[in-house]
Length: 343
Length: 167
Image: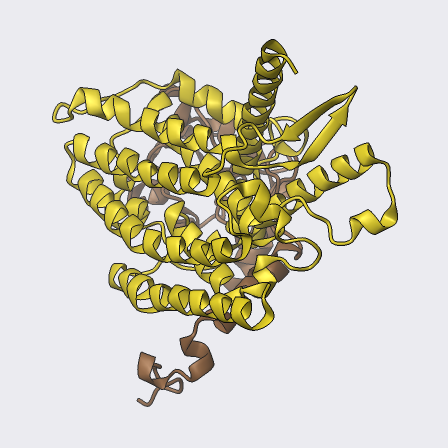
């Protein structure tokens, strides 16, 4: 492929990924409201469009029309910068997630990942930790005690859970011997999914992912009953929409990342035995990836409407006294597996 | 008095409860089952709530079959009204009841739906209806005169039966 073709293909991939992501965010919000309603014996939004299908766009329209209020005490520049950081981080992480195996169309071999970089996993970990800055700066620059408390909680929580998250990922890396997301997916062929090989690491990573995305039961930075709105108390209009979008985008990244690391990525076990046409197989694999992602997203929503919020000291106890040792045990477990079975 | 359920503390939990996960699975299965249960929401403008006779909607005046109100303008309802929502002006009439309300106004912004007016009425002339759809766009509209208050007796039969049975 010439340089021009590579650029065009990359641009097309970026547009498709970002577009699909934004639509997914919109409908994730819709399903969050629907599932919360169903879990509480209600019907949920059903007025705008077919069964309320246009509700997210009505919500967005409302947010656009709202007045943007910045408090007097706020540091205006940082106040405006914080949601931009949140969005930037949330949108750029998609670059390294592999959505499917290579696609062969008209003699071209297109890999279904925007940027197949060698340090993909590090890239994601680095960017998601940058996301803390958005929340902390938002809390600090608002000039409100509730926002500040939310921001402080967020940074403490992220530091605690980043540790166990990093150690859980180490278990995966021991098996795949690479930081490339594509290589990690390929190392989980057949039923050798990391969720099955190292269940402890899977659970610690899953819990840490909940904490990283500020989802209930770990949504202390925005704990409504205690902190009004937490770090986004003083945000309105499109700045608030930026945080809102980033939160849901982070959820999608978290589930895509978990699928890549632990649930075999796009792979369907033993699909090569069926002898399907390569194009059909690629499409099925892409579908499998999206299905696994959707299932995890449903899990995220389901947990939110089932579990109560942790108290702050319980959160810290769980992070340091339970999740951290468990993730260390997981590394030892994986090392033993490699030593004994030579995986 | 002895309570039946003992309060459980962290030290009372057994091993499986302490590691959270089985308990979390229990909670998740409960919400999942709830998701598929029938919903109780009434989709209001299309489906309307039909209240039983004991429901206290807006107070109305009973209109007999011959088109005359039962009210004899004694003013007890106006007197008992804790929110001072009722205004009655009496006048004389040739009919057997001798007095009738020339003007009868209920300010629906003041009314608190307590039902005292109905309780105190000696003639069963003011009763609480089933009407709960009260919306106005200005304060003048919220003052209901006789034109809005008079409701034929047959439409209020449910409430009158309820009153005769329980009052």
